[in-house]
Length: 593
Image (cartoon, rainbow, N blue to C red; front, side, top):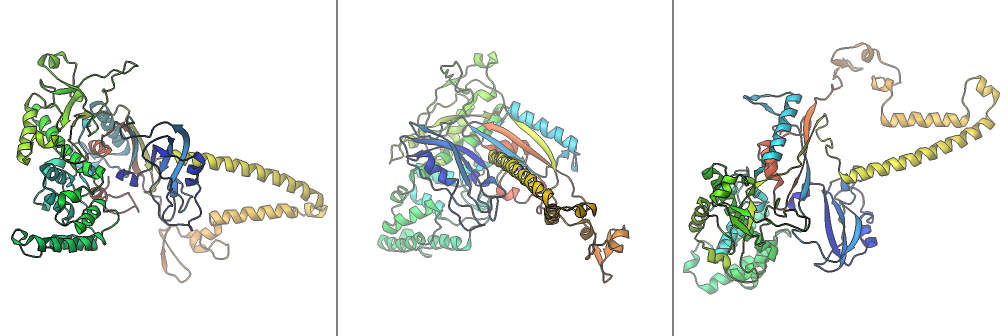
């Protein structure tokens, strides 16, 4: 996932027709010349069939060191694989029950309850953090789709809406238009409600690179200043073909959707629906699912506002699904955002009065052709939204093209994580590693084993050296208090090793010849003078203590850790906001977490 580029992740995956021996090559790639980006593993897999499964420990690409989560591995691989086994089917989306997160919050500062400008001390802060985490576990959070669901510029749902309406020309324009620093604030088609409660509104990404902006403007101006409605179709096709050819050769390789559209329009200009057919299927579904998600976010906010947070008659809950062990498999289901068609039942007033159901049991539909709407005011919320967008249920049922109809799904209104753990830490280095990854633990064991072997070898070597030295030393040497030659050599090596790791006492006190200088030894003030009498700054004092918190929790599929974090921190989680924060002393500018 895109979020993994800033994380350290361990994942299960299946690979088609690869042996463990072949996969192990990822762990030991050929030398790549030292620092710089980590080398990627290249074990490519097919789509299905008999293959192997294993753990993949992925690492963010490091520049100049720390590859694969190993601080000593400068420029090394960003991936480690292991724990292999053969399986009869490939891993698919939805196979796993959830994701376990360990997230480090740095330079945490907690304000007093009745005074935002006054900060709590570390003990008070720790108590508040733990209380908030307990609330997150017991009460949960509104199960909003996070802003990454709506793309970098928070507009993928707008593309999906136009696709459902059959306005593929408008969909192309949204994909290709020039983006602003804050797309929601300056876009005439903005949809504030879609992300209003994700904590991300107004925190759009920075501007795109200049050459990308120029390409987008080239597309917008492909017909010049003339209204295309009054132009000859042949002229329009020629102008669009020329612009599309130019852009298809210049767009970045990661701009998959834009490149696919431009490549097809260069061959068949003005054929916008056909052009969208060349976009990878998963990307086209992403646009449609984003629109479903936008409707869900709006409906969730209005449902909670209108019904004051309680269960009411007409709400939907998932039908119980009991497995062979007698467990309800829908108990922690949040919905997948696809077409699972889970069975639901409508709550009656007697169900509400029984007290059996809570808000954590209520589901809202991800709107589609096969869903059941609630039989209360929430139904009217969906009907109003669709009417405003000019869509009907029939638009979701169209079997138009390879995507087929959008059946819909259901999603829990409230998400709970029953295993929230908080570890509060004090530290001084702003970039200190606060989370120990599994791979780091493995490296530590490896280092400990190698260290034990080295110590044993050194002891055996020293024993042999002492035996040899004892036979060659003379009584005169021992009488003068001098060690045998071999022992002198060992002493010299120890002194060299100490000098490599830290300066000698005399050197650290400011003398060039190994003797303490009078100024350094006798001046207790914060400043001293060098040999020319100039004032020099004293060594820095101890670094201030910083407060951090490591939050660990498990979320079911399709739940967003960014939304859980926002509930915990009461702060936006977007990159633009987080980029303004400070890691602490020496760790960057900006406000604290």
